[in-house]
Image 1 (cartoon, rainbow over the protein chains, first blue to last red):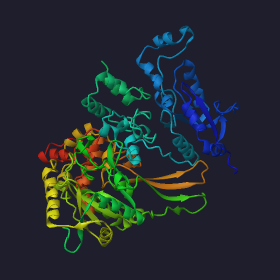
Image 2: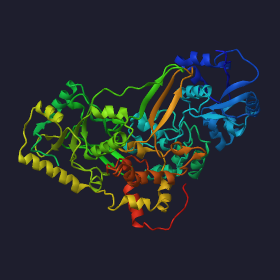
Image 3: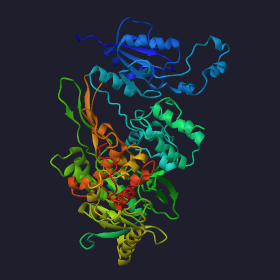
Image 4: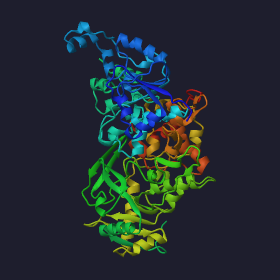
Length: 258
Length: 382
């Protein structure tokens, strides 16, 4: 092959590393990935670094510090395509719960010397700071979807990562609806597909790890859950998980605050 | 009506039902029937009589389903499972072709060769299969995968002995009594200490299997008891689609304010289309792997409730819940008639049970029918 392999970089911001580890988790396909792209910057996997411009940057994590707010601008400048991966990068992550509280209070509880801590009052998604070419949802992302995004990128086609509800995957899998058959609250009808409906397959309601689906009707689901007996405080918490800062979930949760 | 004179019929016990399962399996069929899983009576592979939900029933209401105990040993004493037979004849994912080398030729995915025997198909579901036959096999383009599965199919229908909370087959003229489209039909008779089953044949293949079972001749009292069960089921059905010309009603009311009202509740999650036994829409996706050398095309269940479904150049044609719900109901009850010559609804009520927020299409039709000339809401397509 004469074509030069695209140079790939993997960047980490405020996150647990779970999403970028999905790349290493692609065990059977890892050699094929390494053959298809030049993994030029990936501190989690290799010490080698290549400076300059990257064809594709996978960005994990949210922006929570002044340093990271500046660093993401540099990453954007050095990336032809910037793809965010995971709920932290696409919605601010679980740490965006700080957006509802006083972060100084948190640092005072957690750190012996909070005055050493330089942090922002909010955790925000990458797209609130720089333009993003593609967002891959999930907490964590699904490794099949990550491979699909990379394969699509290499083939210059659109990735097949449907934005419809988790219910569509749940029904395709043959699960029995946990909300209808067991009365278990479930975010599936408003949540973006991609996980393959894991939780309902194990008799749990969906936690909304993949964030809002296209056009979610959050108020209607809240109304139904309230009719089933969920109180206001529980409803507010129900919407505040890994994607608490994503607008449709954030706004719906706010409706149930006192 | 079943012609009991020309086709044999007989009475068997549960042992006979077990013998039928065994005989079909010996003949190479995979028997699919009702079984307990995940606090529901689902359809899955059946190996013996013990796999059937003996003594269980389902209680169904709007957005509600609960498994319950019966006080008898009925094998078919439930109304309708969460998903029907659609996923077996028209599976959620259907591979169409693969290409192992980017420069090569695509290899079409071979049609299924496994023969299926469905045990416990209800009248509404038989009607739904007939409707999907029309969709997949009735036009110029026949679907080879559906055709292959359908050709090998053995159908053991069951006359309903109980009307589920959301059943409305009587008002759709599709039940509760099975009329055609089966190899064998069972009526479960529970008026004696142990259940017995009137077995009637609908095909020569059905008669062939009936001949092998331990049985006794059917008497007039058995036939009368079976008819009485269908009548009782019919009489106990509480829900109904309002009478009238739904096709004309919906055609005339694309801007009725009720569409806004239902859109306020509709989650556009697509559950109704997934559980509907006649909804057939699919999306085609082409995939290439990371090496770029292996390609595949597959067909997946899609839904008119997704934005991608109506995505054309410039965006999604149906950008609101209002337009999507309207599309679904109008296709189901109105334009389906133009397209396929019948209503797309069989009155099974699954969309009512499994809608997470309990939207009831019979109520939506009733609301529009009650005030068909209501002031128009918005004169746009969205």
